[in-house]
Length: 85
Image (cartoon, rainbow, N blue to C red):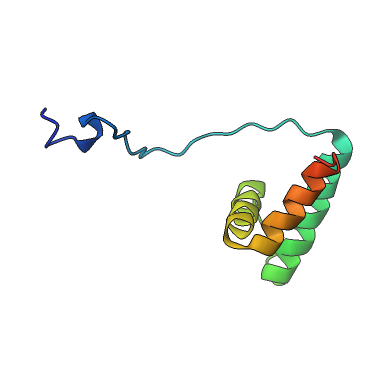
């Protein structure tokens, strides 16, 4: 396969990842409970008739909200500065 057929092989180019990336996070029990309570409330807000929301979907939405909003990103950065990670 030539560089023309596979642009990732061109100098300075990286491969485009096609598969999802798995990330594992260790949470203390209090933070895990807090997350689950928030997701439960969000599930009701999203669909009160069928309040189910997988943690992964909620976390993806949190990531998208953080990267799309300077205000949300700023609040997260402030939490990190205060050592509340």
